[in-house]
Length: 153
Ligand SMILES: [Ca+2]
Figure (tube, rainbow, N blue to C red):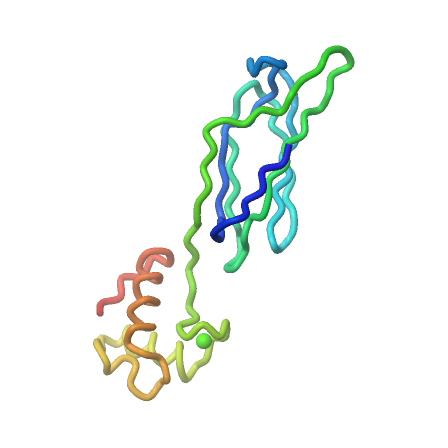
């Protein structure tokens, strides 16, 4: 069974994954989970009758594209891969790039950060760097939210 994530840019997926009988009742068994993103695959096995499993993309720009569930069949009988309580979302990343070119420049990001850390604020932080105040404000919010910073406007 494959769940394709076709809209948005999901970077987090979680669900209760378990083996079940044909009626959907949880039973002992093993389910292998393969998560495919635009940057590769990750495989995990869930061996209990009910297990909450989650994946978070590990790189900026990584998007989860699909998740496949395969039950390992026992010697006798049949088990089914079952999924319940699915959560799909976007994980936050600490990003220093301020202008979206995926590069860190000493004369742009470096200078803006240095000015802010020295106590400068407002337009004085970005003047002459090519970084707009709006870009700095978005980056500052990201740094405070995902990087443990406490930078003031
Ligand atoms: Ca940049």
